[in-house]
Image 1 (cartoon, rainbow, N blue to C red):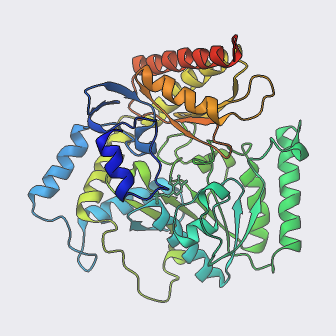
Image 2 (cartoon, rainbow, N blue to C red):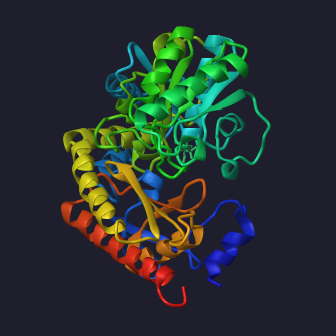
Length: 435
Ligand SMILES: Cc1ncc(COP(=O)(O)O)c(C=O)c1O
């Protein structure tokens, strides 16, 4: 066995998974490509799980961080004014569209969601939370409690009283063959029923990902959350949009994933791509909600001078280069190409996505049932051809892809060609003689 893998297994928890029988150690990167320890180069279509949002070694981000390091100040604590933090908060508050918004910075998406849930619980004086089935919101007790996926839920202990809504489960027999409008109506009726039968009425909030990340890039029909919001508004239930994967124009059509639903949420959480790899997350919320906590709060490292320098440079770059438009254009190209290829391949099921966030499901060509084994095979086949992609979904059969938003037209076509070739190879092996 690979020596580093052996050492990894000895000291890193068994539940921190690595890809491939022979895992890759990435030691260098430039643009949308990375290099492994053996010197092999890969086009990266997963970007450190959507976190290297601009790609690798971006001069503007590196320069901003190096300027901060050269000042000698990596940390001051929030007892002192941090110029970069204030500037970043101003930027995010403006971009959020949330009225009178304030921003609290954390080190991760998990902490961001914890904060949002805390704000909602405090404002509503309730521990009742609505979440979506097949969701993922992080790995703390609170975030796990609102996660709707047993594969990512190591404990049932919960600080919240949680009920799960429909939204991304149209594959279930109960919803088979429904149109978007019919499914939305069924989900809304279920929400009313849950509120009447399973809650004490005073629900604090609803938390949801506009496109579910870990869930396999599954998403509700556009507008579903808008329909939910009408009911939430009647009852004062707060809306938290978890934009950890969908923020910053990733979905192409909107700057925030929630834009597809015509809703301005009360709070949004963000992390992953915000600092292009530097650890920063946060929550942007209506000022009255943010200021509603009655005790002191601090995050030692949240919004520190180095991570905010990286995030300011990342967001400035993203806006100056209109990377949302890039995501829309290249997403359409790749998703369209994948759909075309998948049509002739019985081992490839649904192709879905928005912008540069897309997935394909691998299925048993005979039964159409989810096939995690074929997904693992496709992961390996793409790697063999020099492309890194992700895997996930409730049934472990979704291949998830989210390249850096700086992807070039040529790289988009190169990735699409590799994917198509690899899908054909896996399909041939699954349907050919001896399959
Ligand atoms: C939608 C979503 N929310 C929250 C999180 C948790 O973020 P972190 O791993 O930074 O704690 C993730 C991480 O994958 C995520 O995808």
